[in-house]
Length: 499
Image (cartoon, rainbow, N blue to C red; front, side):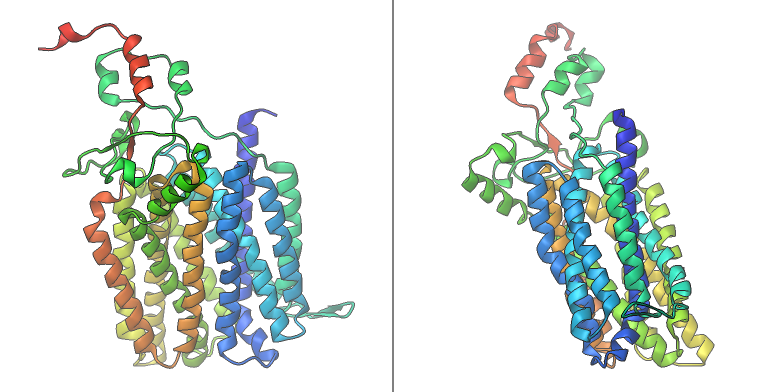
């Protein structure tokens, strides 16, 4: 089988992984609250169950990412993670007690740790110019799952039969359904996924290419270098000098001057103490902290609102499983539209512009919720309209921030440790998805406090983005001295051409 066919099948399998993860979230979320009520669980157990899934993902992500960085393989990691998903969802289907259900979400969450390895693999397998589009497509697959999941719930709620000692009803059916889906995905990974070699990256200077002949393509590809080094060696980051292809479709942003980054040994070839020091310094850089803050705050707000939505609709609109499923399905449509907009905008604007747009929408959404959802007034139709607008704005802004910060994060962190870096980023997101449901679940009767804190976090992130805006770019790569000498020796003298 040729390389291109393997690549298409591998990327398709990755899409299926994210699609099924979205389906799992969407089929369980609308019913887990009433499922817990049938098991006589206290209201705070909803936050615990949702946070347990994120907690195990928070711990497993960096470990699986580090494993993939060391071995440069992801297939074994994905197969292992799928096993945790299979076992966890079967436990959810059994549902004998609230503690078994809590344990099932904790175990299934370990399976999400494969995401850090997958994002590291995608970073190594895509060019810098195409990465935002690829990440948007992969993340859109998960949102497609969030769209399909509620629609499946409409049919799963009709289940009412027994399989041996197990009861299959509208609460346990999602666990059985996901158990079967993850088994099918395991087969797809075995037969349709390959650990593709990393993409070689050319080092070029567009200004020189226009004036003097350069080395051949084979000579350039032999000089493959890592994308960045530690901040101690590099200094501060500035704007990236884009390639001629990228210049053709990205908007020009003045007031930025390119800063070149010298190249050293790949991280995995450095002594262990120095490698650890470089890794620690990498996560303390200003631009990395801003992106991690964006990851945390947006996911914290999103999960807090998601936790609040089900009790809120039950309180004000008397929504049940069907109505909640339709609501989440429509929300998925809005998110898919958002990803399509991001896909288009990424071809015309840089990631930091997309990030700023998304953050603006999130601020508007939070202000709306603070004004209208904390104490809904008026008739039923007016309250429902207020609720729909708030949810619409929240779901529309999410894709902008999510895709922009993931793509930027992959560019401002070292490619040689991309799996671990993505694991850290996802762990920060996991921490947010732990604290968010606990915050939202515990303050459903104190909406002003809950939404007010979310608004304060968004204001903080907006200030951070404003002060660090010029740093949120990809660093350039400066060829080594040996590479420059090799290029100069292969070129004719150009001293007589200067005027």
